[in-house]
Image (tube, rainbow, N blue to C red; front, side, top):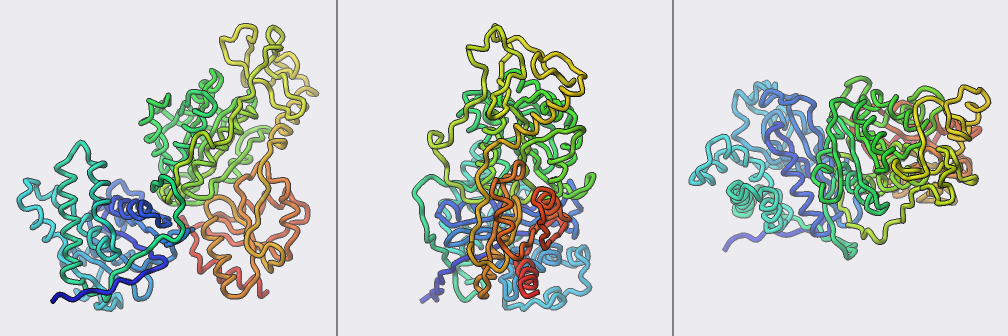
Length: 616
């Protein structure tokens, strides 16, 4: 009678898939996270791939990773270290083992650990496990390459095509380890490869082989595992990346406002997927133009805005530099425009595939002249939808360009997202001209309370007007170099931004009696909340506040920051939010935690640092 393995129930687990850039680790990780989201698990993912177009096969610099954190409840981060590491070759094991927990299960393809593979990975001996201090009892060593070839021997696929299925064998093993329903995986693959059904069926066959290998051999593990969802809210869910959520947020906003959506963009890592996604939705009235450069991408969006569309442009930090002149044209013309900055490592070309928060001051100040603009930062991959929708609402209702800051971490990472109902989203009411203005309209007529000018669409009889880059008279709209008028117009544009209503800054945790308030902005939310919870488990009183709205700041910002004896501002730069808050809040002198590594925070490092601040 076959031995029956125990099935243990876990609260959470972290799995990291790693291999060559061409080994399909991003796809394997994405499928596993999608299946997990489908059954109601909380998920957070972190794709970590090299900037090389294609590094030499088996080289240390060419390793691509995908980490997914799955939980029974809400998951805030991809996890500091993994419980299961899949290493498809020697280089992956060499570079990725540092991300594994002590006692982690290691799954390897022994066919990719030959003498040449070990040499490329700079191992000194053939005892690679001993050289790295890995306990062989924790290693699931499987000849994946050969088993895939055997599995597909009668498929008619050539050797190269067969080897592309190796990632699915590893995925099958992981699905066995965590009791995942292979039917869900098969459905995903049949949908993805709908135009290539033979490829889909070959991959499904290999996944089943990996699952069966684990089931039949028990693969050196004492038990398999199950993660049951604790909080299931009815609704339709999907595993969504931040870039895709951003695209959906723009589409929803255009639909709600009754406008066409226009995106003028130029491909740049890690923002290109927004352009890719929006180009698929012509049926929703979306217009996408891949322009010849960053400047024309933004300038065309300014033109589309003048013509009456919800206009957007997407880029990363280097592109923001190039777009700044066209952005400033939207500032002085007071036209609605959404500028999406998917931040990456800098300066210059920097670290194209890595994540930082180093564009904040550029977003706030990086243009000539007095050019105030609203700035919003998305908190998570799923929050990118809400942030893009809110940025569009502010742009259209307050006639201003808006910068939406995401970054490579949230843009490429994913989470389980409950699809919203369009009917339940907040109304968007563009600030149009009124019938009473017909015949006497000038472009800088303003609402006296909000200071927002009225938007006239070209072609409307009785609302003829001219906008441009030269300063205009606030009453007539004619070009003006009058010093008093210029001073007035600068103040009006700034006052308009300051008057935009944003939600109050929310404090969570030990709100009333915290020994330390942890402050951050944007994508560090999950790590900072996790650090707060870890400190609370140690017995400390800790609170946390995350800025989503950075300009204008929430009205209660000064009150919140002055309420606590100790405040630490943690950010992935050298202190840009801290600088902004010190400028805006009199007497604010925070502690700071700053890293610029191109990688997400490690929660345990945050805990150690914050604990030392509490004790100081």
